[in-house]
Image (cartoon, rainbow, N blue to C red; front, side, top):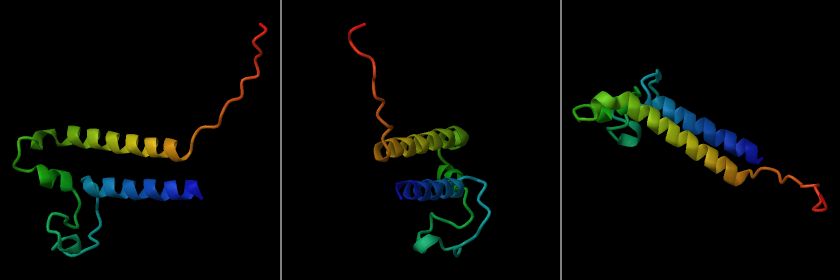
Length: 96
């Protein structure tokens, strides 16, 4: 059951990352934005839109890569927290 929950969480985060990227192709909500929030447009590519006009705009790809790395690291830490590795039994005696 825990694996199914973690799989759903990972899939949802993957969809969010895909939506934030420039590769999102679905328009699932009106142009006014998700839940009326104008900054969350249906076309995706939000990172570029949010950085437009700032001094960080040329570094969009670097910021995107760092963000994906951080999110994947958090997913791995959550997985390690919820699914600890099996304990290895040490059969060696101290008589050696």
